[in-house]
Image 1 (cartoon, rainbow, N blue to C red):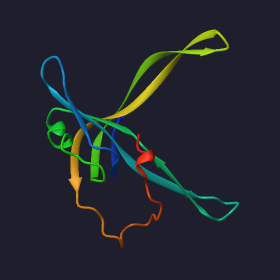
Image 2: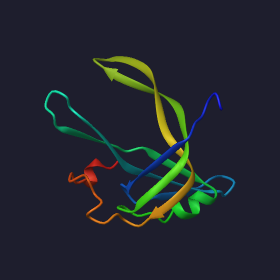
Image 3: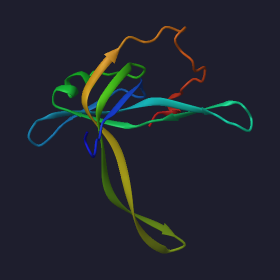
Length: 135
């Protein structure tokens, strides 16, 4: 049994067309985000509460060969690992400057699969995701 594991598996809909770039060494990589939903039942109201997250996905190498062609609305399955990066941001409020560090999270894809969209009978959510929701 491994002491630590960093495995992520997500299924969801692409929010915007994937964008592809080349590194200085001319390696292609693709970036995009997907809508993934989770929910829970509120014990006080006895109602389901849905929540949509928009994780950023980065794909290098073979996974980018598939990812660079993804379009908004494509249903995909992503496997990979969670990565973080830190950046410093300067905030100005009332002529006072403050520097803060922000940690960004993304999934580094090791596998990207475009799936057939589920039939309407398989969909449990009725909430529509709008383009304004896309990250």
